[in-house]
Length: 323
Image (cartoon, rainbow, N blue to C red; front, side, top):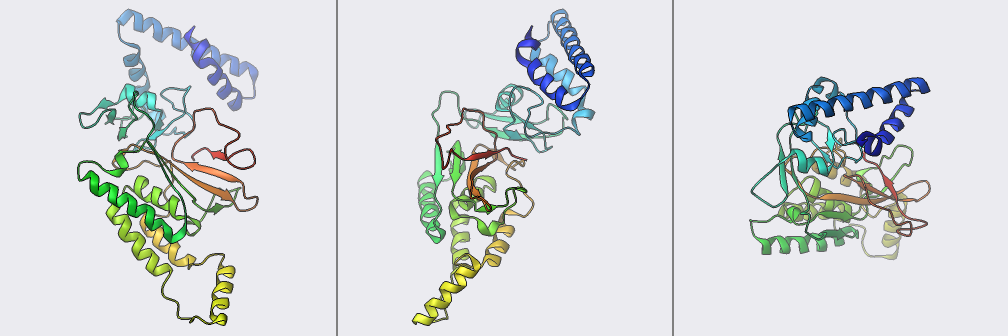
């Protein structure tokens, strides 16, 4: 039966984690099976497609779904993890985007969802990688003020593209290094710890600011963080600057950077939050834990492929599930 092959394993796993009583788990498992049998019989009798039956049954429980949200499970298709967050906060996988969404005429594989399948209120505009296309990947390294070179290159590329295409529409995956250091137990880090590669990626692909605005922002930020030194050029002055940088653990004023970036990126946003406008790029930034220096990946998507253990340092990066 379809339930036994595709869904029972996930349902039993969830039920076991929820209930301690094995009899109750078995009862719920039997109930789910009977409901699916009933739905299958109704589908055969009515002649409705399975997708339509799925939509109708899900929509009938919209009051319950409104309070249930997860970044680890796609409630519309349980075997897959969610990738796209709608404006209502529900997250779905790319398979559901293709099944539920209406394909637009603007670009190939661009879908619009005007009503969340779960609560019927959320909306989203998604650009998926065409099934026959290769992977278009952008990687931007760190380097302090040298980040202006990377953003300058992007500005030239945008100028050559003109007004028809945006840089943000041309890449399926964008990675930046590094986003800085954070406390392992809380997964919290300050914006002042970020490297320019991670900043450029977050500003371009999460805030979706035009490249020209990013260039102006970095120019202003560099002048604020690295003003002409008033200490002079003597040996004592240079030693004073070195000691100041060592004490701050940085060559710039962290408070100035933190304030500027909170104004630009916001202080409450999360990587997996809904993004206004077209969602077309998977974004990732690298970081490291403060206590052990373990390399990690922070993303706005869930990884679904097979991980290469040789990637990264000391056995590879730890992949953090969005939350």
